[in-house]
Structures are given as structure tokens and as C-alpha cells.
Length: 146
Image (cartoon, rainbow, N blue to C red; front, side, top):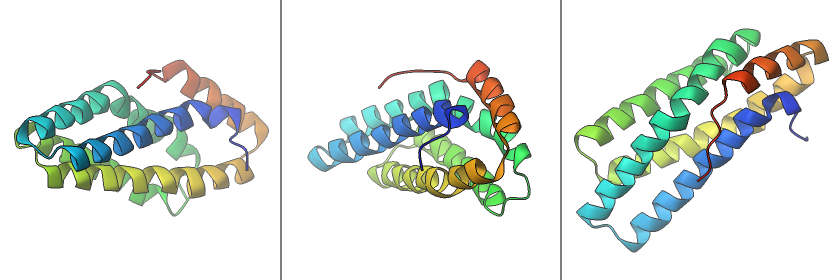
């Protein structure tokens, strides 16, 4: 199913998140040194501060309330908190294991939203509601490039 235009800013942020996962895992595979781990942790933290906080806030304040009864929503919110906690741990003591835990959870989370929640939203919500949500999302979305 093609992504509805109302959800595209969120999907673009998802794309960036998946890119972060790939680049982090590839770099760790090539260089597991403490210096590289620290550099990659800083990139993950920066991406979290620049884009993921914005992304989570838009989902939790705009999108999720529109589909509050959807069975995935509580778990997705819980995953937001888990990702935040992992970033907190990466700030304190970055390790390869923590970075991989972060990328694994982020990838799974994004895939669940894209392949399940967003598909259901597109099927279940009417055009007027999708347009309204899309305007709010578009106005708040932070757009960055890898």
C-alpha cells in the first residue's frame, strides 16, 4: 500500500532512523574500538535530540490519540520510553552492546509502525481526519538529512 501523504513526514523520519541503524551497525562491524563506539553513540544521541524527540512527540500528541483504541499503541509508546532509556544509558556509558540494542529496537519499532499501524490508519481513518492529522504533523515535523 502506498503511504498516504498525511503520514509522509513520519515515514521520512522513519527512513532516517533506519539509515542510522544501518550506518551504526556497519561501522561497528568494521571498527569496534572504544573511540568509534563513542563516536557512534554521540551520533545516535544527536539524532535522538534532533529528530526522534520530535517524532515521538508528534506520534504521541497527534497520531496516537486519533487511533487510541488500536492494540499496537500502548506497546509503541512503551518502546518510545525504552528507546529514550537506551539513549540515557548511551550518554553515561556507551558500549557496542547498547548501540546494537538501540538499533535493533529502533528498527523493529519502525517496521511495526510502517507495516502495521500506518497501514491500518490508512484503511480505517477517513480522508478528512487524515488530512487534518497530516496538516498538524507537517507543521511540527523537523526535517533533516543524514
